[in-house]
Length: 217
Image (tube, rainbow, N blue to C red; front, top):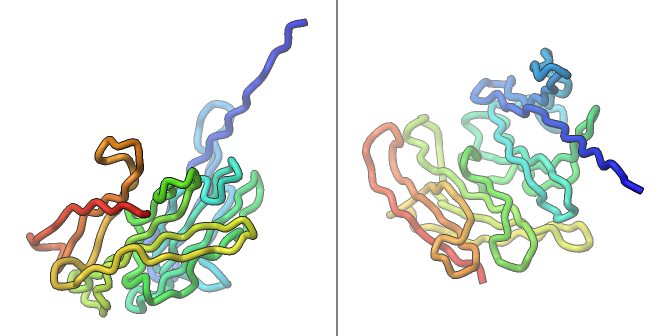
């Protein structure tokens, strides 16, 4: 007997509105049967713990290796207060709930901007995805304080649901204070590496940058 298999693919648009005091938000929008975007958004997340925020950045991926994607949001509450919060959300058709707290108002995340600074990938080649996060410290461009950490963290969800945090890179701020990140097989050896493009100083002016390849063992 012949059987027909129907695959239903649900596509949504997820956007973040950032760099607005007390107005940063993540919006999830659906498409109608004609492929037109449905306005207004079906789901809006406008901060965390009833706190309005200045900044939000998003990535999507299977961070806990359950074959389902989670939505990771990096939040910054106040522009001039460098504390970052990174939450993992479970998203359904009608609801969003916090599933994981990777960081909560953590000063080690420095300026706490996360665009091109969060990646979900198998960074340590153990067959499981991790969340890799780098930090920014080029505060002169915004006239706010910074510790110039140049950190790179790896967050790994354990079998019991707890989160293990590893500091992979702590840069010498004489050379670099920020980095932008990707993960992949950069040297064609069949294993993933972490690739960092670094920065230092006022990002509105020409400066010096390094490209660094990091292997997590």
